[in-house]
Length: 220
Length: 220
DNA sequence: AATAAAGTTTAGGTAAATCTAAATAAAAGG
DNA sequence: CCTTTTATTTAGATTTACCTAAACTTTATT
Ligand SMILES: [Mn+2]
Ligand SMILES: [Mn+2]
Ligand SMILES: [Mn+2]
Ligand SMILES: [Mn+2]
Image (tube, rainbow over all chains, first blue to last red; front, side, top):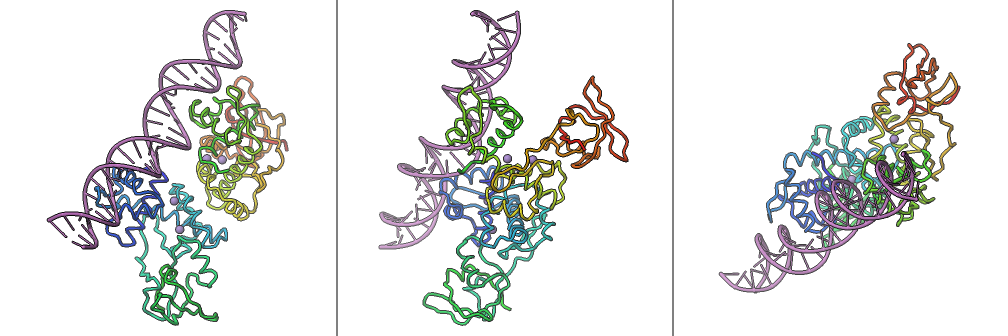
């Protein structure tokens, strides 16, 4: 199946929204994710249905078919491998790579992708902690990631962060939060759901719910 | 100046044809190079003129402006650096990389380009022997490249090969011809302009004019 | 259940990049 | 220098991926 860049971006976003829980992905949600208009989403939905990549009935929302899911995982594999390349080999920092990977992911060559993976030592996660599908499109463990604002334990380790906002990643840089960082929850303030945190050898600091929603942790 | 992929491909092809000698690049030549139709070239010529990247008057052919040339060199820089990456780091062979670089070249990030160059050790030539423009768009020496079919000397060294034809590069692989290979011209056959060659420790063999036109050499 | 609000689709259009066929200009040959 | 051939441009379509505004469904609220 030969997909255009636009089609690939739709497939990837549908995958993401399905993963985030929605049973069927709505037109509006997809328009929001892709920063486009609902009418455009409807147009594309018809096309992707025609290509059998999604299940779609008027007013019923969108779901990937098995074939659509396979396509999505292939794009995600390329995206995350390029992010690894940029960080590991070209010394980019984690907030700079998502945008570049958005372009590099559309170079569709299995040989290139597999050689790149090999060159990087077949990494299992990208610079933001997201798992990298293998050449067959299999994702490792369906990792148990709790967003920090919902975590119960007091001692936590950062296992992933959202890669969408450069500003968030820059904020985390400033606070010294990266993958593997160990956090102590000092206090949770109910009134705005902010959280006071402490990292070893550093003064405590407080983060908003906006931020804690985008940090995935596991108990240590 | 923000160029589309199509515009970038036109600019690069115009640069190539100008370099190959034509004073003004003709509509037909450009259509041939880009594997498109003359009518499409005329359409694009109007657009590129509007953007001040080319000088163009109806029926008078096309030339890059200084700005157009700068854009061309930037695209060529990216193209050749990616080719180096694919060969040096991902072990692709020289006939496989041009097509992939055609896509990778369109990721327009100066930071990425410069980091990639640094990562590769700021290479001066690509896997086919073509020079790589530096970050300022300067090309090294206007290298004296003689195509083999016009070379006078008997002992020659291969300094570059055409990167356009996969079949040619595969043929050169089979014959053991690569960059730096030293060749002895045993005989030139006037009737079809074929050339009999010898590489040290190998039996002599004959190549057609088609092939020898695409091998650039210098006397040793 | 009726109505208001929210979500989605359709209708109709635009811009980019292409194409074919027809018209026109330039070049070449006698 | 006139005519044929070749090269180039124009006119008019097509496809993809968008958009706005209007119409239509679904859902929420009274
Ligand atoms: Mn990313
Ligand atoms: Mn993308
Ligand atoms: Mn090339
Ligand atoms: Mn290209």
